[in-house]
Picture 1 (cartoon, one colour):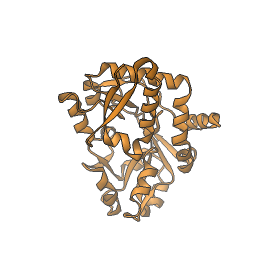
Picture 2 (cartoon, rainbow, N blue to C red):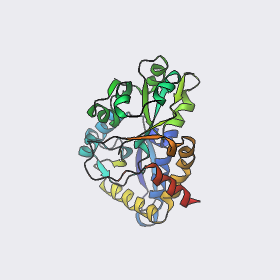
Picture 3 (cartoon, rainbow, N blue to C red):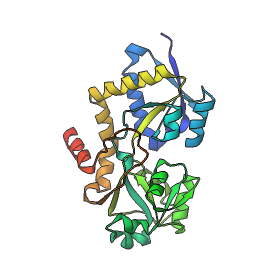
Picture 4 (spheres, helix red, strand yellow):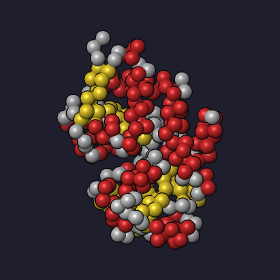
Length: 272
């Protein structure tokens, strides 16, 4: 059986932030070698999210699989594998703030109070549309790497980040932004499922990935990988003791069970 070549965005394959989903992808594909044959990844030049979807739609062969929070454009143009990869982690969000604002935010006890502050968000993030739908006051910008310096200069009051992202980014950007601070008290809960999306010209690959994901769910490898990547982050961010605010996601196209912090604690405890 000929080796299957899988074109993958270089950022997806190598960045610290995507290590977890890449490990899931490899485990899923490895579980199907006996039935589908060997495979090999070939890198694709880095693409941001809008360009990734456009390349998939109009120039087949420039990419085969990406992971991301579900959004209508991707659902309309790509093959969506509806197995939530992050178990709701991306939708459990804490805030990056300027550290001088911590006393103010510590006293927030309602979403209406949070809405009175100015948030920042990248224009193409799925989360941005959700905040706008709920009438949060949001400053939008196009480059994620600029938001830390903008927060340092108090261009806005906060940025929300998934608990899979915030610790990595804090270590990466804190030296250049000494007032960057992970807010201590609040936790936003937004159903925000993350899926693998596959080039529509690669239906067999999509089927293989779906079979592989179900394989590693059934044999426990999925939960083992998840626990390895997120158990420590869960503890470091003290999620069980934060004030929880739930926000509806109006963009979901199918029912989705969103994990809550207590569910993760049970999962991690059972993994011991």
